[in-house]
Image (tube, rainbow, N blue to C red; front, top):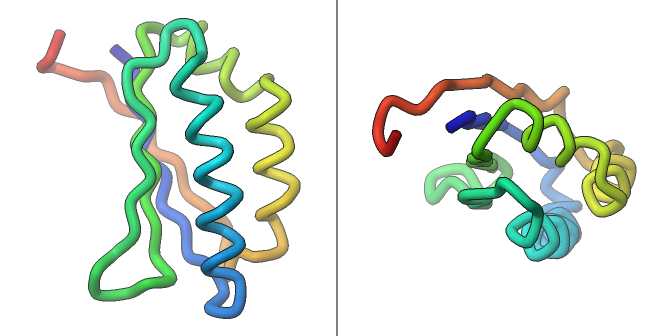
Length: 97
């Protein structure tokens, strides 16, 4: 299983719009072949900080996600709302296998 954790900081005036766009992306992402999880999290201490937890069966499924219409639309929509560049860190799951 391939996991990517994406850290995102959003400009305060765009937090609600970011959440709405991310919910739409999430709803489509969880229907993708090979998707195991797609969690969108907001920090309780800093409402402008978000984490996306994306888990896919394989590298190919994770790569295919980045080519979907809904991901590309989300990426374009939220680009100007970020306080800094988002950081995605790939992981390989140990458990669950």
